[in-house]
Amino acid sequence: DRASISFEKRAELATNQVAKQLFEIIALKKTNLCISVDLTSTAKILDLLEKVGEHVCLVKTHVDIIEDFNSDFVIQIKQLSKRLNFLILEDRKYADIGNTVSLQYLNGLYKIGEWADCVTVHSLPGEGILKALNGSTNGVSRGVFLLAEMSSEGNLITPDYTKATVEMAAKYPDLITGFVCQNKDTFKDPGLIQLTPGVQLETSGDSLGQIYNTPEKVILDKGADIAVVGRGIVAAKSPETQAVVYKNALWKCYQKRISG
Ligand code: 5IU
Image (cartoon, rainbow, N blue to C red; front, side):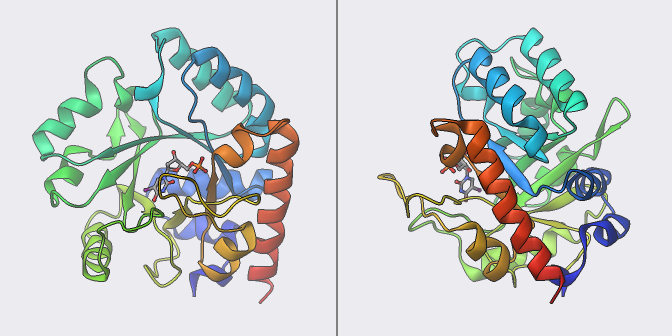
């Protein structure tokens, strides 16, 4: 089963180039922590990443919440991603017909396809959405995390929808980096990455339906390869200290998992 295979080995099994790079970064930096930087100013985001970037493999953004988004921010976050060796996931959750998604991906204020290594995508509209996001921009490899499950209470995703999502992904091995999901049995392919949000040590949820689990639970029981932590780090008194706490806890669980 994929959970018992090392990240080094899984890098060799990946068919999407972003998945391969991500497995390699995880193994090199010994961190399977993704930080979700849900902040609304570019200065705050860059300042936070300067502090926590070395402790994460992946930075998840929501660029449409930034008040002062500009092209210099893109240059700076790309420089940080090179210097501190992390990839960028724009959590755009595309959900329209292929033609519209293609326009949303490459145009508008954000031009996400130009800078994001990978994006999140809903399977709901059908395969056209994946055809719209063919795996490279300007010769640089790109990837897609397909949403197979969500962490929020009462979400409408059913087991059949999850299964059909995984089947759809299998037709696009060059494009699919992995799944955003909550369970180890959701997919089997060891070349794909399980990204699991809804992780926090302090509390079990928020007032708007988010459900949190501990690092132990998501890595050892739920099969997460990368855990997404937002407010658990971002809202902490010392985000850097807290990033190290999450990094170490998650990595310890991964080591336990591969040692059987
Ligand atoms: N996110 C979830 N759950 C999901 C999906 C995405 O929480 O099922 I798909 C996003 C939302 C937010 C981040 O950007 O992950 C979690 O942030 P907190 O750790 O602050 O709850």
